[in-house]
Image (cartoon, rainbow, N blue to C red; front, side, top):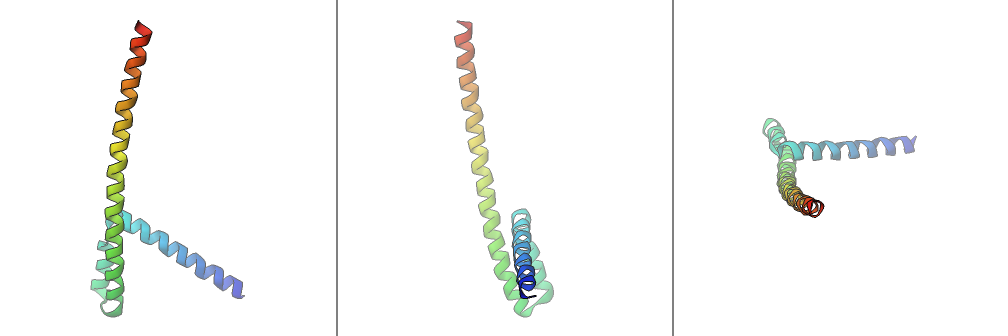
Amino acid sequence: MMLRLIKKITFLMVASAIVFVVFAMMGGGDAFRWIGEETGGVIQEGSDWLSEAADDLKEKTDALKETIGEWVQRAKEYIAMIAEKVREKIDN
């Protein structure tokens, strides 16, 4: 009985964390701010904290996407350069 309760609580915590990360990566803290504005009180304080954390995660995600995009572009340029050198060797 107790093990089932622990499993359910653990599942809810993991599911909540996944939902938070998905919302944070997609839209930042706007969804959490909206919840805080609608409810007020203690929930608003918690939603403010969540929205700040979501904004930080969104900024880091955007920066990571930009960095990966730059790396991919460099890799494409490098591969094109190598392919051109190989073609020159084949032609000679």
